Image 1 (tube, helix red, strand yellow):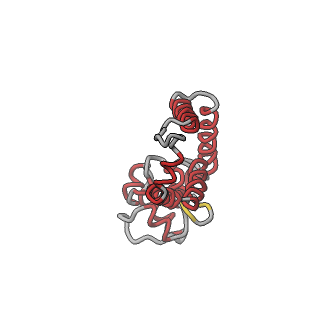
Image 2 (spheres, rainbow, N blue to C red):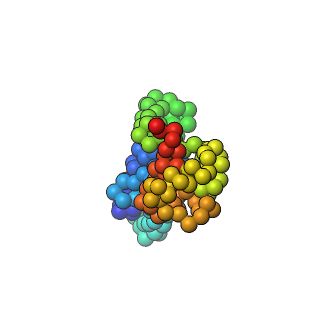
Image 3 (cartoon, helix red, strand yellow):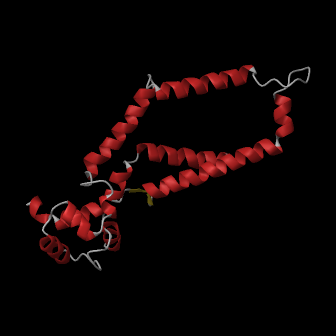
Length: 191
């Protein structure tokens, strides 16, 4: 449980501070060799491990847990002082978060500010999940001249198999981000 909690804490902090998915995918954002999608996968997997470990912990330590929750008369007391404090803290955190009360709103605003920082660094895709579009669809949606865009890619040495290939696959094949491919195709507007 401890190791799962450590991994979940690390990945949770990274996901809190990382760019939004559309920005991360558009820019090929990575930290320590992992993409946002990979951080999300690790976080989710370790959440499952944490839940299973917690259930096993309760199973294997059921008697000590019941003993801890029992009073001197050996009666089970769920609402101990400690449990009441834990419930109050949980309710305060959930309520404060959902109703955007201070200091929770400040913390969440910080997260949004961190995510906006990445937009300033990498820019935004021209439309949602643009990186998943085929080259042909992408060129059409952003209204580039197809021949000129293809010529720009070829002159830049960008390798692609067909106009039906996804922008993200072309980017990976050429060790670039989808944004890099877009900027190469749209070279005329940068002059």
